Image (cartoon, rainbow, N blue to C red; front, side, top):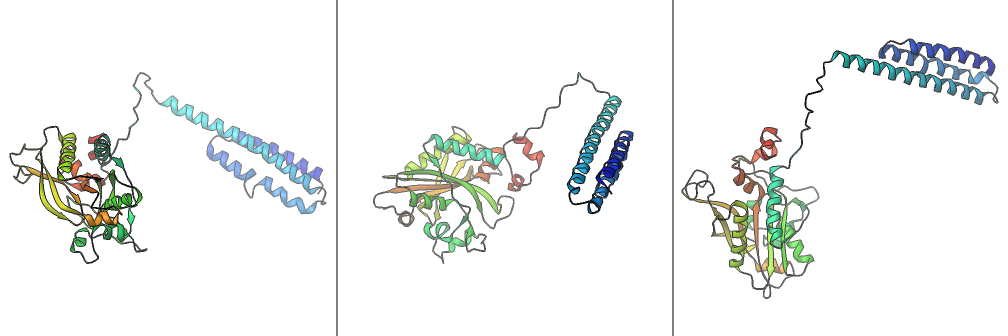
Length: 344
């Protein structure tokens, strides 16, 4: 078969294909015609089988002719397809009754998660007091999470922070205190930081979650004592819960602080008259704090004979539950829009 004969046949095929596309009344008919002429086993592709019948010098010409016909058919197909779609849309719109006086639909906007909002509130309070934000890894080594914080390998306090181990020997941090150690090792005092972040413990009930969020604070300077700590925490509580909020410090124990205290706020729900939420005591526990243990300062390469410091740790979920009267911590993680929309 000569290339001239092939070209003549291709011209006939082109005319037939164009007419088939134009005769298509809907998308199904058009798709059927496309497969017939342009498919992998279609009429146009079939002419490539004649390539072996031609002389070597005519084969490029055949390829060019087939491509030319394919291009013209594809253009016709695209034009007809667009016309069918436009006609379908016009018919659809014609059937609808559109009231142009109706107001437009307002798109639904997202909102900051209540935990993120609470974290920013706390951060803003301490940033205004001259603190800086420090970050650290969530996958932590035993040294930074326990040993450098005065938790020896056999210390019973480790059982209070039972955690999740990873295959490489590291663990998911149980508090953001490792950030304090890393900061002491990297920077010379005076140091004034807060360390917000996600932490993990094997807890799961209405007031505890296996994953939760903390903000810890660290202040190292010459001559610091519990009076300075109390003043900062009182200002923090009043900034968060109201200017008349009272706090009290109770003796406690933490391996990384000495002396250690639990910090309570006067019940914001009953005004210290006694209620179910404060267990009739008039006080609600909010955070733990204390003076940094000399052993922790030494692990951070800071001389406790020259420098002193205090630290605290507060759960962001705990604060958010108090601020908004939420009784179940699991609500923060269930992605229930009925709950989350209350904070938009």
